[in-house]
Amino acid sequence: MTGGIEESGIFTAIWWVIATLTVAAALLVVFLQDLVKAAMGLIGTFLGIAGLFVMLNAEFLAVVQILVYAGAVSILLIFGIMMIRDTQRGSQANSLRIPAFALGAVLVGIITFVVLDTQWNLLGEAMLTAAVQAGVEEAFSDSPPVLGGLLLREFVLPLEAAALLLTATLVGAIALVKGE
Image 1 (cartoon, rainbow, N blue to C red):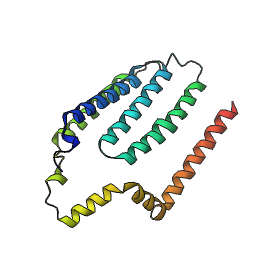
Image 2: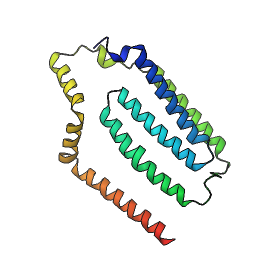
Image 3: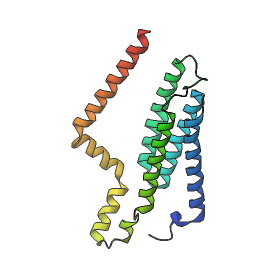
Image 4: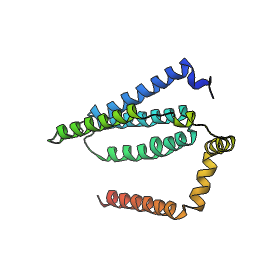
């Protein structure tokens, strides 16, 4: 599929704008001392990642990203921050700052090496038969019904275990807050 919107200059420019804003919001999360502002940067990061998912034609993942992370996790995090008395002070510097920075630099180096060393477009260059190509297109075109069917048929037990774990976590958080 050549000549699509993905190959236009406007698409590339929009991708770079979203990617730059997402990285800038992530840097705000790391460097801001005010916890409320850092949480707002985290929400911006989550929304930017959802935008990148949309540009990758992964709309289902974008919706899940917005509902779960930008919605539920962010609200829970903001409630937790609001329970803290001194939100402007943030975390104090400690002796682990330099090792954490070194570990982060090593991880960025490893990820950069992997990204630059990987041949990415293997599926596009593969000589697929028409039946295989149709199967690939069908799998990627109807992903929400396929994922829902898998969760409710083959993976019911892990889904219920995750629901039970989240419920227990919520009950534990309420018990901790109510104890004060």
